[in-house]
Image 1 (cartoon, rainbow, N blue to C red):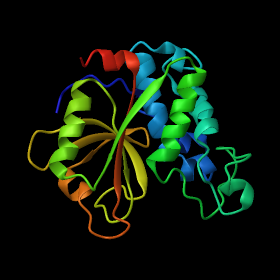
Image 2: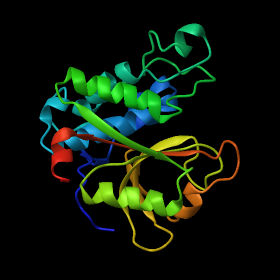
Image 3: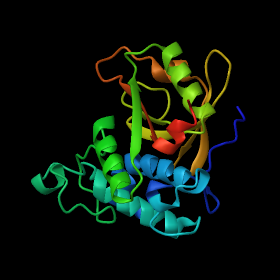
Image 4: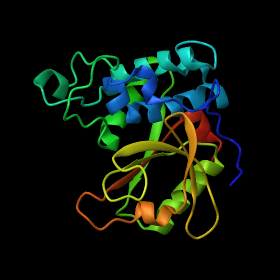
Length: 224
């Protein structure tokens, strides 16, 4: 641990918190993918000097929620089984949650929204992705490379995980031990996944894991 490159302070919180949309809201129930994406944009804006990605100045909750609301409109999580909710039309993260939503169940929906958001703000974004058809060693090398470059990987875990099933988190650091302990941001807190091996490897049909890293072309140029 200890790379120390990830800027995720939102006031006293460590990254965004989907409960900020309100108790029982669509955002609280289905907003983890949007929060993960907003955390990446927050880090790029404050930690990498890409301030044009941020709708408002400041490092507090109000500025963060303006960003999260803007990104929600691009990502449009699936928030229920009625036609208007399923198609992503007229969804509001502060309205009462409808049962049966899926949120952002895969990288594709988040990627489409993130890239659209970047284009509108004049900052083209790139994405690299991986899922758990790749080996643990490949996943750890993927994380090491991006974390060393100061990038913020997002992890989506479906079923069968010891922690945070059906949930998006942001990975802010990874230990060097074989089990690869992860430091993460979720619900506005610094949490840990002690054993990345158990989190990554799954045998059931719904034991899927996805990694996605979004970055700017400016950051890409530092790699060469």
